[in-house]
Length: 160
Image 1 (cartoon, one colour):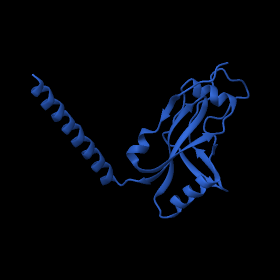
Image 2 (cartoon, helix red, strand yellow):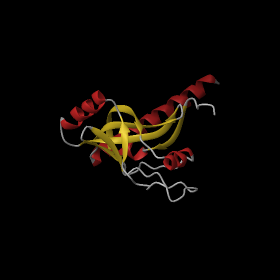
Image 3 (cartoon, rainbow, N blue to C red):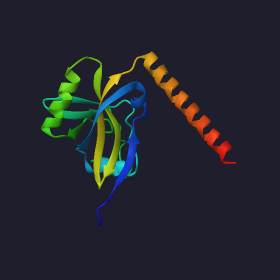
Image 4 (tube, helix red, strand yellow):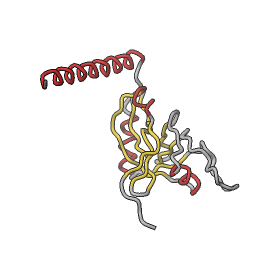
């Protein structure tokens, strides 16, 4: 069977980019059972309420929903179980330091994808945004969109 090449996106956590200011990002492997891999290959996963924790120098992904495999048998996995993330010891220490500096920081999973046939999770250190931060982000995005529209319109007019 030929090995897969490249990346295939399975799930993105769009809410995380809205609710958190994203800091350092890391790619981690993930320990999965056979039916979880099959379910991911079908493109079924959700990171909406997911987060990661560090317990006893191990990183765990919690509340990530990988639905049961539809063709699975009694050996099917539980959809919301905690899953171990695979990181180097130095990376875990660096994450612990980043989380321990001050409160309000958490490990947020941003996406699940396959990279060269292996399941990966992109996690990041996120700082919770307050309500006014969210409004400010939306305001900046709208202003940038408006500026791009004006620029495109001006370029279109000058071409003719």
